[in-house]
Image (cartoon, rainbow, N blue to C red; front, side, top):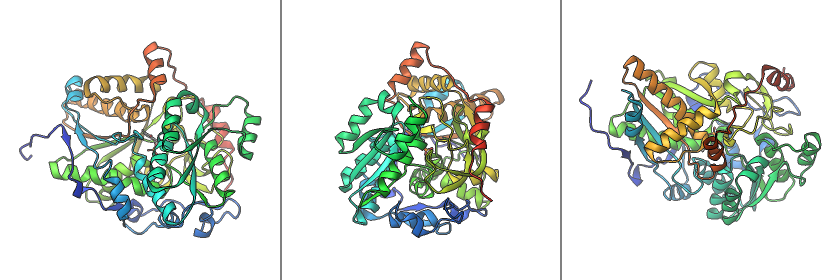
Length: 458
Ligand SMILES: *Cc1c(COP(=O)(O)O)cnc(C)c1O
């Protein structure tokens, strides 16, 4: 073993070391993710099917399984410089508090006003929409981070932004809503009475607090029925994982620069974009047989797509208007309990990650809400950063791995993605502090019901 260099607490790259290309992990996958299907014809979607919904250039990225690298347009690189590079941090204080021989690192993506990694893809999607001469974009937001990120990017590139915000978050996070409006976005609670699908869901499930799948349906409906608008999505899609690869490329560059070799890479998984981005270059090495890493997805026990879902074609939304994607899913009719990690309340999972998981290239664990907040609090007290509930799922798993090392004496190197900050999640922290937080885990019957309603695909 080489003599160990003293690793600084915070490792920043230079501005000129920010990646200038995104990496497309699909290029190195032997088993490509399954194509999305047009629900009308049952055939793989074509560029023509997708261009009424998405910007043209993003459609190309979505469908390209072969090009390994995409140049990041200059304009996006310029915007990236306002919030990148993000630091890779050695969690010395957490290691000490745990008394673990493990070395813990995290890549912190919360250092921008949106408070999360989502700005990496929002800026790309807003840029391409503007370049295509569009008036605006529509989207959904769960916890509010994606909506905030998109509002910021739309303000920067000069686009209208209409956001459908999952009702539970809209009510719990009024300040998040005001941040979006400050950046010029129009924000509507979902399900709303402004769309056909919103009215239908409200009639069927009176008092529902909404879900990401339902808000997606509303945003798509408005995009396809409004001139000069397209829909943008903050996770799940191949293009979003592509944009998020900037996280992993930067993390890898910092690891190489400072002589860090992770054994275990951990990330929370809602739709899979931060995890897909963080692991991209590492997974590339693994797929090419150059290196091996343990890669762990962490999901909430209340919405356990990987660990209790099925690998099947399903709609990406509750309204069943999106293309069908083959993914680990709980069924598009599954409405998860009002878990505080809004960004992880999605019934499905990225098709890229689903295929990698299916092929055994990564693992998944599900963790319960109260144990997640326990980890969040422990982390906040020693490392200073107040983590987002979503991110804290990764913290929980990282702490658990570090505690295993304490038992076995192994000096493993753990890298996890700290996707964002939790300043707008104080209602959740309040419940945790008051001891009123609960853990809701769906029963097998709950899941069987929504899984039985999956669309039939030959
Ligand atoms: C949206 C979000 C997530 C989950 O989304 P992925 O697409 O799975 O990355 C995780 N953490 C934060 C802070 C988020 O905002």
